[in-house]
Amino acid sequence: MESNNFIEFKKERDLGAIISDTFKFIRENWKAYFLTVLKIVGPVLFFGLVVLIFYMFTMSNLFEDMESVETNPFGFISKMLSWVFGLIFVYVLLYTLLSMSSLFFIKSYIENNGKPLFSEVKENLLQNVWKFLGLGVLITIVTVFGMVFCYIPGIYLGTVLSLATSIMVFENKTIGDTFSHSFTLIKGEWWNTFGVLIVVWMLLMILGQAFSIPAMIYQFVKMGTVMGGDDPTEIFTIFKDPIYLLLNILSYVFQFILYSIPLISTVFIYFDLNEQKNATGTYEKIESLGQNNSEE
Image (tube, rainbow, N blue to C red; front, side, top):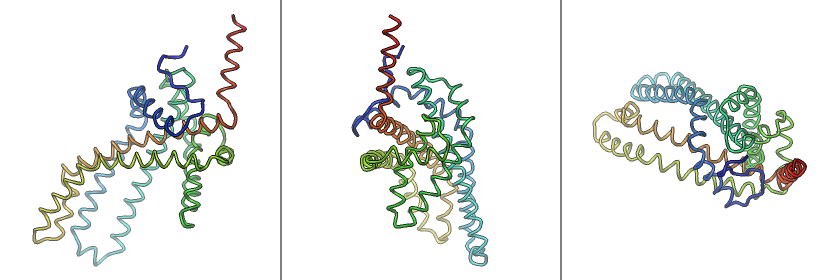
């Protein structure tokens, strides 16, 4: 028995329906969804925020000591790059866990008619974490390689491979099969898919910037008061300012949560394309009707 608010994923949708159903899904399942994400991603997110704070303190100390920067520029660059690569690693891990928890939550939601089970989400995540990391590395390499050639190949490949995680989760394919099936599924529908993704990501950027405004205002005010001093390096003390750190941490957390929007949207896009090409949802409904009639 389906719940009254159950959202049917396995059907065709236009751009407006994909966006509206994305927010409808979040609105009606926000408590269970974000509780699941928090349980899975929370510890790594906390670790990432701690790393970010230490990074900002380190950068503040490095820039304040300009004399050592001038005498040992390679040491300065190596320290900065080591922190940057560390932050990139944490970000990739966070985004991978967020993607997995979001998609497996939706899978459990569909299979249990609107009543997802955390135990299923956790079990699926643990069983497939290495596949996801492998797929993520492959997608990153291919997309970055495409971006080297005037961005256009990278944009094309990024759009095609945006479906890869949904294919892996809902069709349980290997990394190689997932990669190739992405091109098959999007064939003839690339522009429509790109149109949906660009609208969703623009909306995400606008919302993300809105959460960044308090930190930006405080930064400008603080810089205005500091720049009047005699020591130009004093401007870098803002990275140690507790209010500035708190505002930035809240901004990063809210922006991280917002990444759920494009993830959920890509699932709707996947099912829309899958329904156009394979009519999987239609066949399942016909089979269920046949079973119901035979039982009667």
